[in-house]
Image (tube, rainbow, N blue to C red):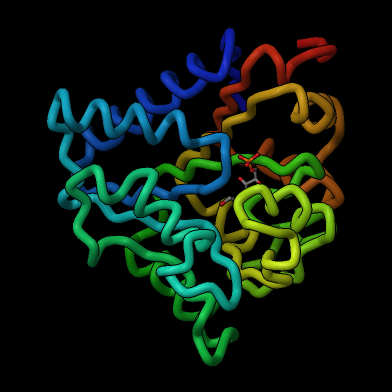
Length: 243
Ligand code: F6R
């Protein structure tokens, strides 16, 4: 595990964007794994800025998103597809046919999970997977207790995750109870994993990541087993943490 400490959120976003841009420049048909949530927004803003200024091209890039709510169509403002379209995709020259998401509106969700897992494999795996982490250590929607061998699957969201995510909805009642997420083993197959951690509310999970052994009650801890795992973390998320 490589830990990059940054002064603040902006510097974290800058370092993450630089790693992604370098990957795209080295390999114009790379497969990038993206996450939603608040943490990567600054990084996406910088990718857009770079695209406008330096014309880094995403034309042949494939993008795969980690997860999606069950029941939300891509036109729903709180769906992850909608989020990614607005925060990143509509601002760069990525080809719509190269954008992959689990479909939370599929009739047969089990089949959809299998289809999505095959998509990842058929693209030759993910070259660089961007991740955020939940306060309880979840990655994607893999909540504590998720087996490390899990592949793409349907999950019941915990009340805590629904509450935290309700900030992206008008009301907590609108937050779906289920989602499709890449599994832990699907995530671990990525060639490089880039975890972004920012803010005081992540200090406890950061402390746990650095001090606890790998165990399934702290899903993010499994990333320490990955041979190419980078964490970019700001000072607030390292508050009280001895490194
Ligand atoms: C998002 C995702 C989640 C978030 C995590 C942190 O696609 O899979 O695991 O990365 O909940 O969210 P933020 O960044 O909002 O703190």
